[in-house]
Amino acid sequence: PLLRLKMSAPAPAPTAGVAQAGVAAAAAKPTAAANAASSHLTKKIQKALTLRVDSQSSRDALKCLSGFFGENTVHTRRNLRSSIEGQNLCLHQEFVSSFSTLERQLESLDRIVESLDGAVQRAGEQLRASRSETQASLEKAAALRKECRAIESKQQVLDKFLTRFRLSEADTQIVRSGDRPMDDEFFAAFERLEQVRANARHMLNSSGQQTSGVDILHETSEILEASYERMFVWVQQQCRGPRDAAVAKTTPADLDTPAGAVLKRVLKLLGERPVYFNHCLRDIARVRKQALLQRFLEALSQGD
Image 1: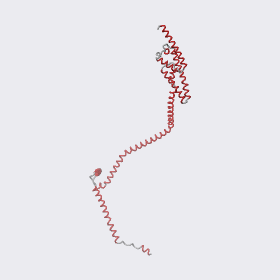
Image 2: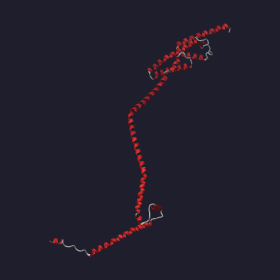
Image 3: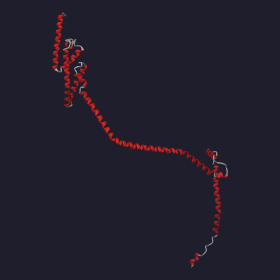
């Protein structure tokens, strides 16, 4: 019962001090609002006073504003911010519309680049495929080139070998053919034949290539014998020739002629074959004996 009495007891009345504080706070609110509005207006006025209307930026701003600002009324001044924002929006729209053409061109260029990129990728794939397909051909071509270089090197070695150890077909015809005259070409070919045989003998003595050296000597021996036989036959023809032939001359002055020089070179070479050489000497002695006897008889008959 005591607790119920305390809860049902009325609340104490506010004191006089509290009431006065509330009245003072209510009176202070309009005064603070008025001071804030005054301070804000003061800042605006100070900001407007600090603006320099004679600057270039201010003149440009006023000039731009005069293009769309109409009559100077309270309504236009209140809506100035929205007008400026609207004008700014129009300018941005014009800027965007101006770049729409460029955007389309860029999109077209992007499509072209994508197309080129696809073409390059396809070309790369085809190149890789063709490279893989032709790899075997390239390897075979490289092997053939290597083999060709080896063959060329062997051919050069073979050419040098044949130059040193083989008589050419032209020289062979010169030293063996009886229809050709006995001239400087014959003696030059004969010297080359002797050089080939000398090279073969040197190869036998130095390198021990028995088979090659013997084959070369055997092959050239037939040509050499044919050359000696041709020189022997030529001397025989000279002995059976006219009386004014070189073999019929007896003095060194008479032999100082082209035919006499050829005869001396032939006899010098035939000295390597005693059989041919001795036979030729007997024939030449016989011819000269007959020539001396004939001149002696002519001198007796003519009294010279």
